[in-house]
Image (cartoon, rainbow, N blue to C red; front, top):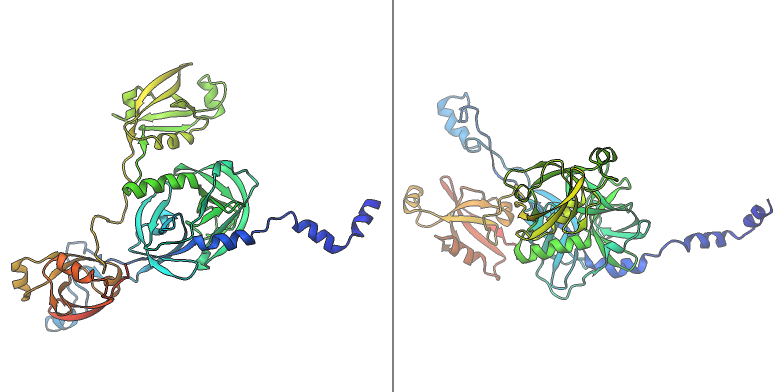
Length: 460
């Protein structure tokens, strides 16, 4: 009882000071690292949507023939729906080099037609997507700038559960927001995410934080904030980040060749439970149980069989099935590796020549190269010009960015830039590529009419 009385007799300020002294001070960290964090805004232009009639043609409205030609002027072309408004998205990222390379999440920039980066000092730049990898959710961007502040890289392997971490980003568009928490767990595996040993934190991460950095108390980036588990769509104390060493390995490949090459065995695996370990005669649950082997795959050629348990990959123990895809994925395709498998109560070693994982199927078409205005055009044939009763022009195949914002759409014919006729894609690109041009007038033929459309060029 005397001890309680003595404690209550202490000054309130002393108790408060003792409590706060145990918490870290993030002020210097935020002040120093905030300039390395960027806000990313994306725009996805809506495409013309074709609405086919069940019988292959659009039915003619039930109006008198003499009135139909009049009303048709106010209708979209057959089977075509009006354009929907452009879609906008937001995310975060951070500078990994002083010459403008930026790391972010793939899901932030995938399917975007335009990517804009805003720095901490309020400057804005158009960004180029160097490459993205959906399997790890990492993308590499580049802006045209020099002398920029960049992050320091830490070692995520040295992180300890319970250690303080800090996230900086733009949740719900609120730029330069800092939130703190602790490392809740390491090496987490999420459904359909086989290539990332996620770091789990309870730092407040919300939509807009995606792609932003996770710092340790030294001010070093240890991970890239990627996703949350939530029933509400917002923060519920479960955030998952991609270790920075995994992210940088992906970024290096994206910078070098625009994509990531991964090794492949061609097996379907599952976790080894205690019951399965007992049934296969293993002393403890470990390794990856082979449930299926693809025909003509590297695994089949190496002699891997269904019911094999892969205990080691190239000498490294496979403690859990989730580790195997990461090990194989990190192997250079075409190289050889040794599999140590458990089969019928004994271990066997198999030599496998690692294959290559096929590229991700990206929904957005990337084979067409858009010019500065966001246009893809093709030359018109002589008979097409005669039919359209024009002397010059190029056909618009696709329109994004500045061109789409100005109202240009596929099927239009661009006859001239200002008063200069154009007949080829190269001519148009040369005129639009003039860095001194900020606004241009395009003579566009649509249907029976030709009109000038003013176009504000992106500063790329």
